[in-house]
Amino acid sequence: MENQQKHKRRINWLFVAFGLTLAYVVLLGGFLLPATLQCEGAVWLWQKYLSCRPANELGDFLSGAFAPVAFLWLVAAVLIQAQELKAQREELTLTRQELADSRDVMKEQAEQARNQAIQAQRQADFIGEQTENLKRQAEDYYRERQDRIFDEALRALHKSVVLQLSNASFQVPTTEGTVIGRFGDYRNMEPEQAMHEMRGSLQNLDRSIAKLRPREKLSLPSGPISTLSDALEKLIEMRTGLSPSHQIKFDSLGLVTSRECAKSVIDKEQVHAAAR
Image 1 (tube, rainbow, N blue to C red):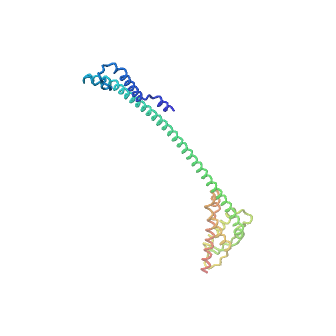
Image 2: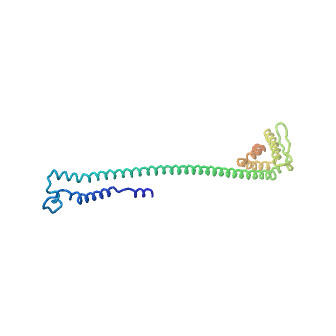
Image 3: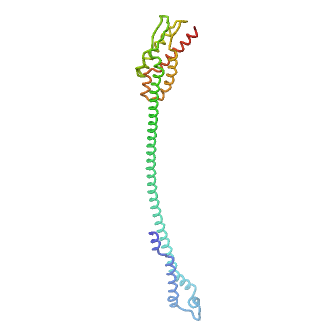
């Protein structure tokens, strides 16, 4: 709107010069020429006022007549050029202002984009934290479930296998004499206590068989011990899935040692039976 109003307020110096020239021509032809000396017997304008004059006088007249017109158009040209330069300066000012506004808008957009990037990064970090929390919760749930399964398997082992060895007797003829012993009474013990007691009995039995006399009769509860070895191997495979607290519990029970002793007893018995 402001630019349009400025364009409307501009003076068209070309029309002004043309109007002033026309007015000058009318003044020259209507008032100035009739006041000069007229040629006799002439009809046309040229013949009436100019044909009878000498060349130098005619030149002076024409130069004097057209000098104001030339000066008028020179002034008009200068004014038109000044007006155009002013318009160009105004356009340059508007362009600089628009560029400045554009820079401000771009700065605001860049700031908004940076803020959006920061928010997106925060959301990504939050989602990552939530994902890690869910992952930890899933791992904790899995390990808790594995802990319960391990406890159930330990109780099942106590009921199905360990109780078979409760008060089971064995006789081992060694080079130092015949060792007669029996496993403990595990019926009224908790599974953890029973595993501790049974580990000690298996270690003593394994040490006794290591001193076994050749071709002597060996009396052992081989079936329950062999079953115990296989069952303990399955329990040992569950260790990696347990929680840290249950891994400590697992290590304290000595299940690996009990399995190695049970397997060693069975292997030595088989070797002794083959030798007989």
